[in-house]
Image 1 (spheres, rainbow, N blue to C red):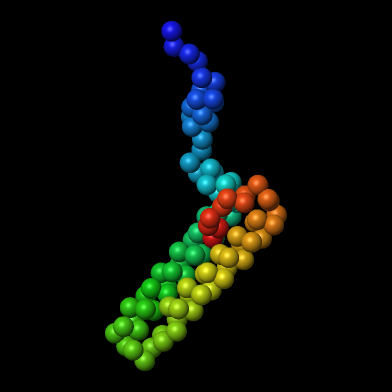
Image 2: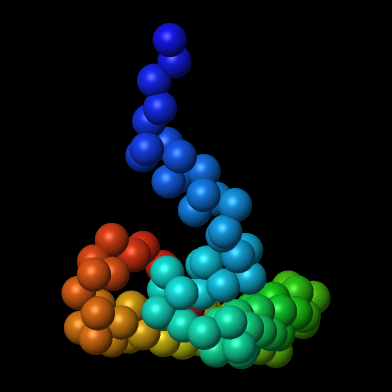
Length: 99
C-alpha cells in the first residue's frame, strides 16, 4: 500500500502555484517592477561598459577606466543593496546576490 506523504504533496502544490515572474524578485525582497528596473539598469551599465572596453581595445587612449569604473560601481551598488536587504529582513540571510 502506498503511503501519502503530505510534505511532498505540499511541495508539489507550491510548484504548481509558483509564479516564475515573482518568485525570484520576492526572494530578494523586491517587487517584479523594482526587480525589472534594477536588472535593466545593471544590464545597460554592463553593455555600455562592455562597449567601452571594446573601443578601448581598438583605441587604447580612449575609455581607459570606463569598464573597470562600471564594474566597481555595480559591485558597490550590489554589496550595499545586499547589506540593506539583510538588515531589513533577517529571513533573507541566505541570499547570495541582490542587484
